[in-house]
Structures are given as C-alpha cells and as structure tokens.
Length: 202
Image 1 (cartoon, one colour):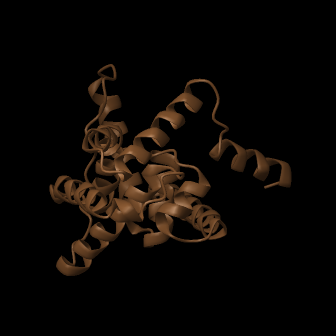
Image 2 (cartoon, one colour):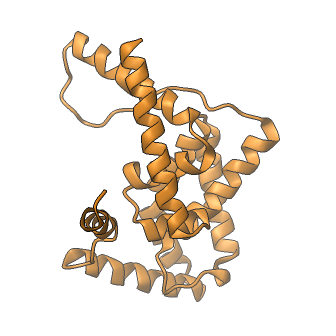
C-alpha cells in the first residue's frame, strides 16, 4: 500500500470529530467526568451508550449466553474501579479492555471453543430462500475463518471492521502499540482472504 493510501486509511480510522460527533464527544467527556466524581446517573447514561458495543464484542469472543453476563460484569468492574479511568480519554476502549480480560479469563478457565453461528440480522428486507441460503453460507465461512485467526488479529479485525473503532482506540483497548494493531489487521485480512478463497474453490 502506498504511503498516501496508508495515511488515508489511518486518517479514516481516526476521523476528526465535527458537528454532531464533536457534540457527542463533549457529552461523553462530561458524563465521564461526572461519573468519575460519583454521579450514578451519569454512569447509568454511559452504560446505556456503550452496552451494545461491549455486548457485541463479548459475543464475538465467547459465542455463548455468557456474553451477557460478562457484559454486566464489565460495567460492574468499571463502576467499582472508575477512579482509575482518565476521563479525558474515550470511554469505549477502556470498557473493551475490561471486557476482553474477563472474556479471556473465562475462555482459559473453561477452555471454551468459539461456536460458529450467526448474529441475529437487522431490519433488512427478506431475501429469496436461495439468496438467504447463499448469504448464510458466506457468513458461516467468514465466521469459521475469523474463529481460526490468532487472538490478536481476530480481536483487531472485530474492533476495526465490526465496531469501527480507530487504530488508536483499538490499541488502547487491546493494550498494545498502534503498530501492533496495524500488523494484526494486515495479517488477519491476509489470512481471512486466503481462507475464504480456499473455501470458495473447495
């Protein structure tokens, strides 16, 4: 990838806040400051804002009903240890870091293997049975390929392409340098491409 293209990708991953994005960031910053000061209502608002992305992340790692329990545990731990949080920084990467540690602890304790199944779909038009079957098969292949990735590349792919987090926020969430995130993304994309191409010709 050319330097200009790489910069464009990095720039798109760290899109500058403008308009409503800037207002949303200011509102998040205000909530974080109030929550850190012991404002329970502000913390409840943060939970409402970030419950779904944390749950999606836990689900992608666990593939079981444990995802909901660990999502709740994430917010309980965050509330108990909120004095450790820097309210000047984004909240989601911090929550994802907590959720990730809880998920990995559970996987190690129970030696859970991720089950391959699709996430529930959104409010999309219902396709024909043939197209739906083809789409389900494609998603199933993608999930199998994703599950076969090493831990780092898999988490980086999930956070960048599914949660649409920036390189910087992914680095904070996974507690690694930004260069490692870029390496994991490059490696993960290459492995996914190979796996999907191999599946399509099998």
